[in-house]
Amino acid sequence: MKRIASITMLLLVLSTIALSQVWWNRVEFRRVPNLTAYSAGDVVGPDTVAGTGNLLCFSGIVPNGSYGGVIAGLKLTVDTANVTNASFKIYFYSDSAGNKRPLDNAAFVRTMKEDSLIFGSVTLNPLNVTGTGSGTTTAEIDTALAAPIPVRTVAGSRTIYARIVALAAWAPPRAQRIRLELYLKAN
Image (tube, rainbow, N blue to C red):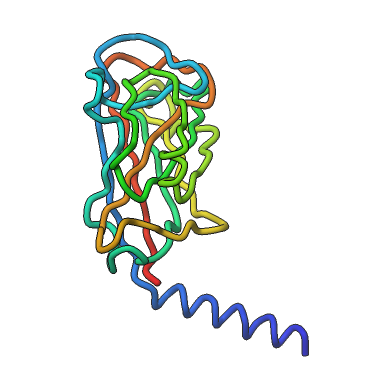
């Protein structure tokens, strides 16, 4: 009888997932055109001008406004096979207002205001080189979250913000492309 109950529960969960709608969005940027290595705890982003950004914006990804689902998976891709120490933490924010905007390669220092806007985070470690041989040019990690992150945005917003932080020293090439993809499952 226990086995039948387990199989029934499994079928119920699978049918629920199959009927759910999934939204996908990505943000891609080129890192700054220098060879400066990241230290553990540095912000990874496109901007070197104070106050301009390094928050990634996933506009329109939330289907139903402020309580529109869960982040069910994500994928981080970099266009280099140099993945020694390439591990990251991705922070998810409900709003961009009040967020400090550190420069690329600046130390990530959280404030109480920023902490109140964080609704989740994911550690990606390590990146895996895709392909084989000398033509290999990208590395990625693609993960389905065992514990999906409930989305929280400001009232009526359909936007999620994210910040990438290096967890270890990493020396990527000049002007490297970095792409973060999110998979959001509707409630």
